[in-house]
Amino acid sequence: MESGRGKLYRFFSYIVGYKIKTLILRDLSNEKLDVIIELSEEDKNLYISNLIKLHYPNIKKQDTEHSSLQQSYKSSFVIEKLYRSNNLVQENFSPIYTKTGLIRNIINDLYYTDDDLITH
Image (cartoon, rainbow, N blue to C red; front, top):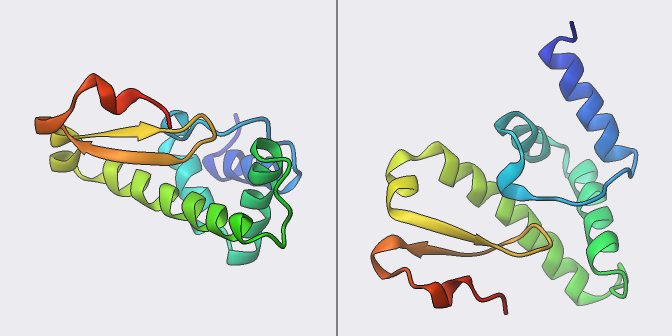
């Protein structure tokens, strides 16, 4: 049986090995989310650059939009971790995700409507 550390190593190798198919943030295990968050800045940038290349193939690394997407992915990982770690937030807010793995919005359930589900 593979240890937890072995699974993390295999996942990390998967990330760095460019074998990225997609990212569905809400479906990531807590363990995998932690691995991504704890990556070195260089490895995290590499991972996110490959997500950008997959989902936004026309955006070049030198474009300002690439930098903005990098920050959006990084903050989405952190916000997802915060959301999962706080029961009060989970009970009162609903995250809305993009098809490319970003958190588009977190909505207070008191004001939640079906209009919030429309992807812009």
